[in-house]
Each structure stands twice: as C-alpha cells, then as structure tokens.
Image (cartoon, rainbow, N blue to C red; front, side):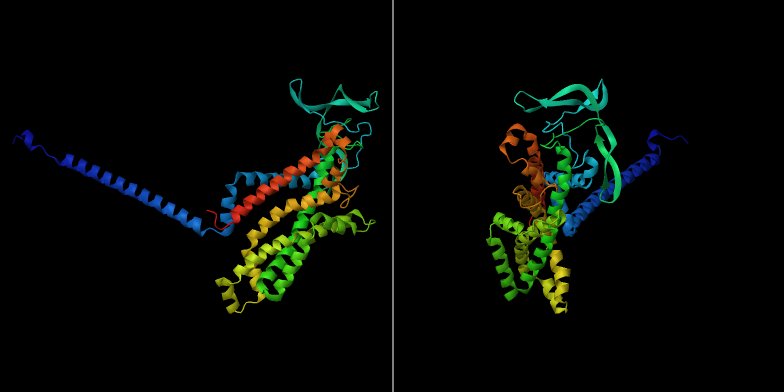
Length: 401
C-alpha cells in the first residue's frame, strides 16, 4: 500500500507539543513558587521587624545615625588608649628632659633614603640674646624603635613589663612638645586620660545607683515618699554647680593622699549628678505603675521589690543608658573644672584638668601654645559623647520609625 503525503503520522509532533506545554507549565509553576517565596520572605521580614526585641530595634535605629556611630568609635578608641596608656606612652609621668624645656612638637619623618624608617632630627637647645630658651634642629637622625624597652609599669594593672609602643633610643621624640619641666606632653595626656575618663565612668556609675534607686522609689510609692524625694532634688539643684563643687572640695582635708582625694572628688560629683536621672525616671515610673502588666503583677501577689527589679527597671533601662551617656561628658568637665581651679586633683596626680592648670597663664598660651593641647583632647571626647548620647536618645524613642 502506497501512503500519500497527507496520510503522514502526526504523533511525533504531538509529543513535542505536549513536552513543550509541560515545560511551560513547570516554568510557570516555578515562577509562581518564586513569587510566593519572595512574598513569604517579605512577610517574614516585616514580621521579624515588628517582632524584634527592644534592644534590636534600638540598635537598628542607632546604626542609621552616622554621627552617633562616629562618636561611639571615638569614645571606644579613647578608652582603649586609656587602658593601654602605659604601653602607648613612650615616657612615664616623671621622665624629664631638662635641656628640652618647652620644646615644640617634633615632626616625624617616615621615609629615609626611600625606605620606611621613621625618625626625628636631633634637638640642640640654648638661649638667645634675650635669655629666652630656643631649640634648633640638627642633622642628626634619631630613628624610632617600636616595642622598645623603657620604664617599667604594670600593663592593665596586672602584668609587670617595660615594653613601650615606640621610643627614640639615645634621644627624645615628643609628638606634642614638652612642658615647663621638660616632660613629654603626649605621654602626660595619654596617662592623664586614665584618671579623667575613669572619674567620669565611676562617677556616672555611682550617679546611676543613686538616681535609679531614688527616682524609681519616688515614682512607684508616691505620696509622702515622693514629696520628700522631690524636695531633696530641688534643694540640691537650687545651688549653683561650681560654687557647690568648690565648697565641697574645699572641705576635703589638705593632708589626704591622692587616692583619697580621687575617690572624694568622684563621690562629690556623684552626689550632685544623680538628680537629673532621678527626676526623669520618676516621671516614667508614674506612667508605668498604672500599666496592665504592673497591675497584673500586683494582683498576682508579687512583692514591691519584684515589681521594681523585674518590671520597672528593665522598662526604663533604655532611658538609664541614654542619661548615663549624656552624663559622662558633664562628669569629665566637672573634674576638669575642679582640677583647673586647684580644688580637685593636684600634682603629682595627673589628669586633663591638672594639665590645663599649667596652661592658664597668658605667657604659656602666647609663647608655648602646645601646652593647651589637653583642651583639644577634651573637646573631641565631649563632642563624641554628645553625638553618641543624642543617637542613643533618638534610638530609644519608641515613636521613632
């Protein structure tokens, strides 16, 4: 039998069409599945956003503030430098270079004959015709040596060592110049930060204890307790800050050791600085004590101590952190002001305020302006704390999106 062209079998073509239709169907299903997965992922992100904890939401808001992040980095850098200050500082507080009094800051040259070999030029000191001390650089090259041995100290107050980050064996390297006794300003600023930053930290911690305890108790109990606390706060805040600091500091015995004076100044600053936090927490607790979970805890038989420590303090912890961050620069400025006026820490203890006390005469500012460098260091850390505190305050705001 002879088959005509019109009777050719169509089955292979039908199979190809079916295969193509199946492929298109699978592709459509895959596309729909991908769209569904994308929608589910978007929903899960939205749910995770609204189901996030308070601290997660605070961190998300905080990291969007670049100024706050920069401030936090600077603050952390300052405290790391203070912690390892004895290692970073090339000289101790008592190291004197009697021939290099009021030496200007030295310039560090990084390359020598095309090679990376940091060095400074030698200094020749003398007097001019007006008997004014002058310093001239010589052709002598003094190379810096890293991880060099120098005066001994305790690293982090625990490990005895004599290794310093850098030194100039056989000479002097002074990045920020020297003072009237030939002491290196860079080393004194680094080591002085240990006292100034620690006073701010310890003072704020003590203020947090006073302010948190009295503020929450005042807001929670109300009545006569609240009236007594508020009158006490008003009494403390009625006195001007600086005269009150002067009066309390002047009451310290002159024969006290520097350690006792250090803790006394910290205690004085804490006794004055707790009122702001106490008043803010009192207002928050007045609103929180009428909330549903606090009333439910009372009806369940929870004690006052459990309600305060289990519910009220965690609810106000964000505000406590913000106030502590903003109070740090105030503590640092207070210590600096007291030491600058001669009513706080005194030599041989070294802090930023003590360093500024030596730069309060016009002659030093006019002829030796580098002795005013501690003021620049203080301004930078105060601005960093302020930026970080503002960022935390905005991040802790529950109405911030």
